[in-house]
Structure formats: C-alpha cells, structure tokens
Image 1: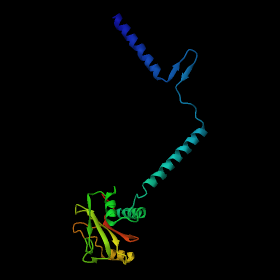
Image 2 (image 1 turned 135 degrees about the horizontal axis):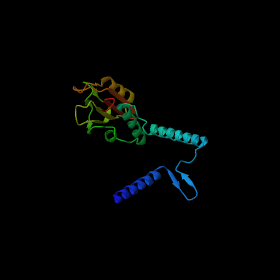
Image 3 (image 1 turned 120 degrees about the vertical axis):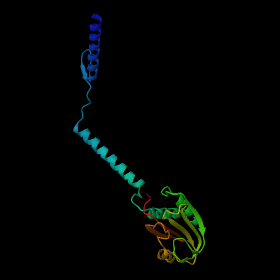
Length: 203
C-alpha cells in the first residue's frame, strides 16, 4: 500500500513539473523570464506591412510578365509564336516553322507536319490555293480534333495581303464533318504566311 502511495505521489509531482514547463516561464536563481515575443512598435509593424505589400506587388507583376498569354485564344498565341520565331530567324523555312509550332507546350495533341503542293488543300472547300513555293500543313494525328494549320513561303511575285485574303475567303471551319473550329487566324510576316483553324482553348 505504501509503495502505491509513493508511486502516485511521484507520478503527480512529475506531471506537475511537466505542466509547469509548458506554461512558458523559466525560473532562474534571481529572475523569472517569460516566454513572450519581443515588443513590437507600431512603426516596425507598419514597415513590415509595406515590405510585405511590396513583395506581393512584385510577385504579381512578375507573374503577369511570365504568363503574358493568359486569357488569349490558342490561335492568337500561336500567331504570336509565329511572329516571334520569324523575327528571331528571318531565314526560317516553312517546314522548320511548322515543326516549331508543333513543339510548343500548349499543343496538347500528338501532331505531324507534311509538305503540300499548290491545289486543293484540307480546310479550303473546293478552292485551289496557289502562289507559294513551299507549303507545310500541321495537324493532329487524331482527326476528331478541329485543328489544321499551314505555313506558306510565298513566291516572289505574290502579294502577301492578297494571299492572306484568299485563305480567309475560302477557309471552312467545318471542313471536319464531326467537329467545327472556333477560330480562324491568318497573317503574314514578310514572305511567310501563317494560317490556323482551331478551338479557342484546349479542354
């Protein structure tokens, strides 16, 4: 019985000691130090708030710069890529440009490119497309995706604006019986013309 009482008293004293340690005070010989955060003045708090706000603004601005294409349609982003690549490499071929477009991260399908000759082309009804010396079509390998694109390098005597108009007038967004493209984008850069019919966003 005495042993049980002793064990109980010992356990109670240990529990009391543990609770005391958790209260946030430490006793020294001559002083008691409370476990509280250092004093903060209004000025230092205000500085921290300004600093924090500034960091948030910087991160927002950086985010905007990185994701400058947010909210743009697929066709418009691809057109920007086309112009950027043409400016970077004015001597780029139509084949190289088409392969570059297909390599972009935003292209969410397995695609392929192939050279085309003047005449009847996919996506243009019964109109013959003529006036280019190099033409390359790029498209998904799965035919159910409403996406078809072309890059043309024009013959020297062909007016780029007239060629662009020819493509616009004859483009058929319902060339694919199962689906319909939501946008048609066509534009020239020097002797090269970019054309795409596609959905506005990939789901």
